[in-house]
Image (cartoon, rainbow, N blue to C red):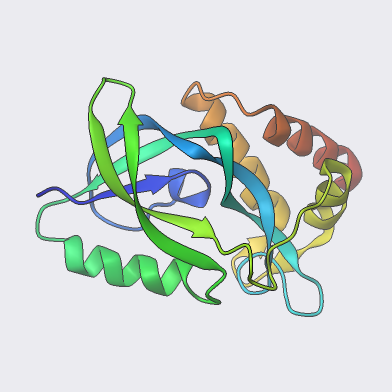
Length: 176
């Protein structure tokens, strides 16, 4: 059986594993949100950044990309993803149903926020912009994460008004 992985943030532009197929898809009951404080990759414990996570909401949906894992790379991919995504246990690993644009339904490994974790937060867009504009972590500036994600969503034809607004506001705050 084919292993699928759902990407909605940095996996869009940096999957980091052998991809067999890539297809735009929708996950129902969740929305993409800068609701996770990043203390490793895009910020520090002293100056946390923000990264995207999937936050549960009954009427919500999130469009992203479902990646099939190249045959024979399943175990290696799962090990890699767990090391990358579960670094602080703020994400939970779940297998969720994704509706692909071409009509297929697939089950995909997906990383969602643990709303009980201390890195979970709910901030308004201006607060998010202020944090993202200044945070830097082990994988670089928080601004790079935001802008790369926004650009790749647009290239895929996926609209995300909040990310577009944040990208523009962060550019203004950082003078870029």
